[in-house]
Amino acid sequence: MKSRPNIRNRYVLFADLLLIVVSVLGSYVLRLELGAAFSFYLPSAYWMICSALIIKPLVYYYFRLYRRMWIYASVQELKLIMAAVTTGSVILSAVMVSFFNLGMFSGFPRSVLIIDWLISLFLVGGLRFTIRLLAESFSQHAALVSGSKSKKALIIGAGDAGAIVVRELQKNPQVNLIPIGFLDDNPVKFKQQIYGIPVIGSLNDLAKVLDNRRVDEVIISIPSAPGKIIRMVADVCRLKGVPFRTMPGIYELLGGKVNVNRLREVDITDLLRREPKRIMDEKVGRTISNRIVLVTGAGGSIGSELCRQIARWNPSELVLLGHGENSIFEAYLELQERFPTLSLRPVIADIRDRERLDRVFQEFRPQVVFHAAAHKHVPLMETNIEEAVTNNIFGTRNLVQTAVEHEVERLVMISTDKAIRPVNVMGATKRLAEMTVLDAAECCGRDYCVVRFGNVLGSRGSVVPLFKRQISRGGPITITHPDMKRYFMTIPEAVYLVLQAAAMGDGGETYVLNMGEQVRILDLAEDLIRLSGLEPGRDVEIVFTGIRPGEKLSEDLWDGGNVFARTLHPDIYQL
Image 1 (cartoon, rainbow, N blue to C red):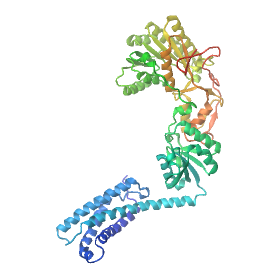
Image 2: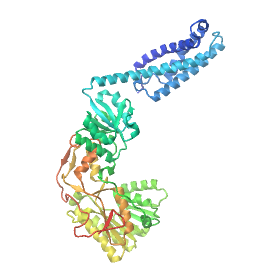
Image 3: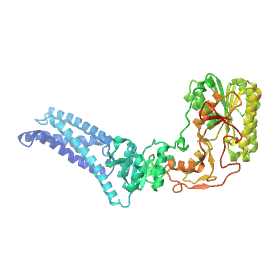
């Protein structure tokens, strides 16, 4: 649709015409003062006024000065004004010199052109920025008038994002939020002002400020704030009964139109309630570098991350084996882009097909195998027992037998905490799969081992993506039981530790990753809601649906009868 000029800009045009006359006459007066000289040069002034009234409005129109909303004038508009006025003055100068050479008038002081340019800059720019100042003054007056109804907002972060928040609040009184101050940990900013709003302290002063001042809402304006900062603010605000929200999506947030897709992306590590594990890579290179590595389940969450980390160590060839063509294709494309010199071999195969596995191993001759292919969803496997048994047990048996026959040097099976004292089909099948791997290591003297850990945050089908979808729909979040607990790790740290464990093994070991303390699913859900800038119960409801078949309230990483020993890595134990 073709845009039409703003009606108000017609008044700006009329004002410009008046200012053009004022500018030309003013330049002559400043140059000559009123007197005989002024009278002598008056004909040239007449020609200059007439020329300027034609040239300058056309130039301003060309530079779209009459299609701007000047209540939002900024540095960009100032640059545009300078360009338009300068262009108009250059053209006017050329015309006036031409008129003088043609004998249109007898005298012409050249310096008035420069004076006119300076006066025009001041008048044209001043007019437009006066419009903005008047609009802001009106908005601030409206905010003061409605001050008793408006909420007082405290801004966390006095950087660029905080400045944007304050500007938007000041320009939009209908939002009913008045900024009263900033908190920022940069001591250089203490007692400074941003758009008239003072920096009144650091983040450590939050509780004191909330106690001593009227604060109706806290806005976190640090888009890159780590989870511990947001959680600290959330805890203090919750203790003081003050709501808070986060900066990204500020235009929606200021109007209360909160949507999880418009908020900052929650960093998965924010949900761990502990620091991520430190990674020690020293021995991994000897296991992977210049070797042929095969990963089963390479299109899954764990399998694809295994491939990413393995690729860093320059294997001579990396075989991506999986049953789902789409996920394998996506993993292959990603690795191909990130590691263009690496030899990648995508293979579509089902580990339940022993003959197919034999052909794959015959073709590629893998030296190291990481087994991540498995059915993992507890409720689904309770009603699909045959699939769980054939894939997790028979599939693992096929893989192990094929690996033994083709003299694979090292095999690492990815297992789960649900294999300990299993009470569900999935856990039982994984336990039997573990026994298959360990029996092969003992009987055949192979360097085959098992690495066991709990839930990973952010994997497909896990609670975090589910909760995000539920939050984006406005809730409710569904949890089976308020006391449900699980061990959690991020996918990258779990895979790093798997690779480290693989480098340690001599065969027949079961390694357990130290995952810290168990986390209540309810706490995780509440953290995710708050990290998204919302409040549990108020913005997003949490509903308890009851424990599903095969679920336990908490999991174990080892059997009570097992003795575990520490390894060279502080976060890896050996049973």
